[in-house]
Amino acid sequence: MHMRKKKWARPELQACPFFTEDGEKWKNRWRERFPHPERPLHLEMGCGKGVSTALMAADTPEINYVVCDLSADVLGDARRNLVRACGGDVSHVQILLTDICFIDRVFGPEDRAERIYIHFCNPWTEKPKQAKRRLTHPRQLLQYRRFLTERGEIWFKTDDDTLFQDSRVYLDLCGFETVYLTEDLHQSGFAPNYISEHERKYMDLGVPIRFGIFRMKPEAPDFDPTRYRLTPGVRKAALERLNAEWKMNNQGQ
Ligand SMILES: C[S@@+](CC[C@H](N)C(=O)[O-])C[C@H]1O[C@@H](n2cnc3c(N)ncnc32)[C@H](O)[C@@H]1O
Image (cartoon, rainbow, N blue to C red; front, top):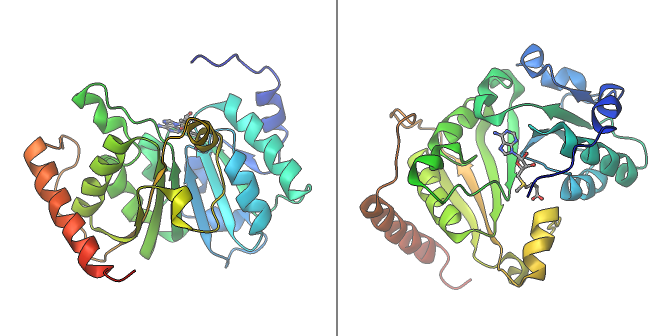
């Protein structure tokens, strides 16, 4: 669906003290942009209109957030939603206009992010060669490893089962272990869960939401992700192993 251009979005963002599109200038210095640089730093990749971001930021003012998207139009809405939800005090949030495909130009090891949220990223399931554009593809995950803290986490939600299962394999391959997994988030009792714009849409259609928390292991995998393609055989074997491991570690729960 093509979104109508919002003429007000850019001027509002440009006048906003917690917006930037100069991400590269802040590489390794993001914490300086917050009144409390020592607090945990969480990033959101592809925040869209920031519907869940605003609820989460209002609920957790003790966390610093950088929320990213490549569309100024949706970030305009995100800014408005944040101001509304946080009652005007948005000093713990930074909005960043950037292309996440090149995210390691913008964040570095000194930024020490504790957590990354990826919610309902585009699934790119139509053609195998499009998979490299996924925000959970190994090309991305190996970039995220460079600025996550030791044992930093990725929190990932989607309605798309193919994307979810492929991503579990990518995450395993890139040295992330599963610490939480559900194939139906809203039946799982997991809390708190902040419902995003896309999540609401799929909930209303009765589609179960897949959700996982994946923690970075210290050992960095040694492979070139640029040309990586998941083959059906590798996928099947990896998922069988991951499902067996998950079942074994969570027996009785
Ligand atoms: C399907 S929407 C999901 C929005 C929101 N997270 C939600 O759950 O409602 C995906 C968002 O990711 C953004 N996006 C996709 N690829 C991106 C990229 N390479 N860099 C930055 N943002 C991207 C899109 O602009 C869009 O806002």
